[in-house]
Image (tube, rainbow, N blue to C red; front, side, top):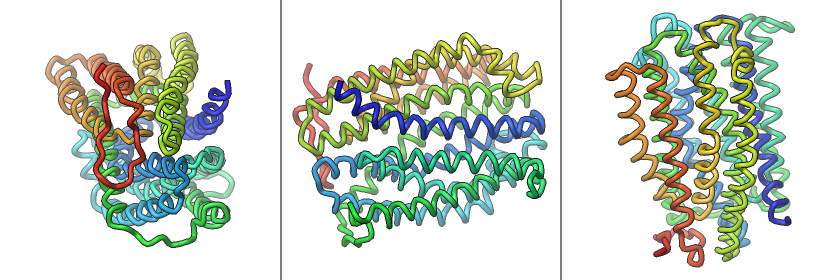
Length: 453
């Protein structure tokens, strides 16, 4: 029972954090949806593009999350702070690249995705502003990763709730010109994210450099070691490859659906938004698995780390089951919350049923994956993501939609297959690890041991 309480203490604030992000996306989509199907389609396409851009740079926060968790478990926070310094410097360089790209890439990216002229005219400026917001968002995720690594999941939750409140309220005000704000339409939704991410960034700086300094000396500069720079870059690269492989798979998935027309795009965006609700408990428990397992590995307790992950999976799947049942039973009313256009919500109905069906596999894949990150088994995660996406999911999506002309049914068949295979692979790997030999990552080459049985 004590272990269950520990897991829930880590997971529930993380679930609230991810829930706030998901509900924010839902509410923004509903607000923008009143403008018509085209703005819904723009938001859907740009969300996938932003996911890919975030994935390119996401490895840094993933590396900080498990490396600092191991440092916290081994009571070596001086090294954890050194790794955080390196992460912030890397993120600053990434931000400069993203800012430059925001002035030259948006129109071309939308064009490559096969967007029609209506999407291009609405989406180019919207994407540019979203890219600027992402710069602050990348810093925020790094700060959040550090906080979670030391077991503080409440502060990221609080800051995320503030961020969500700002995004929703300012989106409504700036989209329709309420409360003295200018009426900017779709652009109002984009600028609301810039404002919210900037405010969150300033709060993160305050928390990290002022409030946390007393306990962890976060303002003290720790001389940077080359070995730690290499470790951070290498782990960030592997985790970035994992996320980028997944996001590029979704990019191709969306590009294939984009060619089916505005109604199909809007229905797909609604279904994906619904599917993302299943990621709330999965990501929350996955984060708890990374933190708890990382800290136990830092303490040199491999067997306890394994048990922590298994119990986390059980608890996570209970949550996922409840969400799956609700989605399946109330698919039509849920779809009508997004749009009043019959063609859109009718098309979305079968996709929501599919999303409900794969929820348990989604949860198992994410939570076991979080456990593998906790021990630092990033080689397996990156290689599996590369194989499943580039050998199976991407070719399968193209074949089913463009060659065999199965439309959205074909695309979602490929997506559900990816989710199921990822769950099977991650769970198999987790139980094959030799937990007695798990060690903290120090920067030197170290293999993850796999048991012979």
